Length: 118
Image (cartoon, one colour):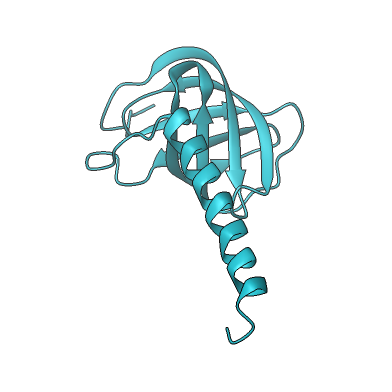
């Protein structure tokens, strides 16, 4: 079998999460191998997921944007989107961004209630 990957994948055993629908939907998974360009994910039951999503790997403190390449009953192969140019966002930074977005939305609603002309 000919290897088509540009970079070698290393064996891993990392807990992961697939996030989609603006972080409203989440699937738990196991990252079994990983490279700079992609990974193979294992799911406890057959996954139903979109073509693009975020992959969070808490043990590595990172979140990456990914695209589905292949899928079977309980596995999926993914490619990281813009692997060469993408920056990895830490989980702390993502949580802080989510907190600030929620705070912004709450303040906007409060201003709207206070200003009847808006």
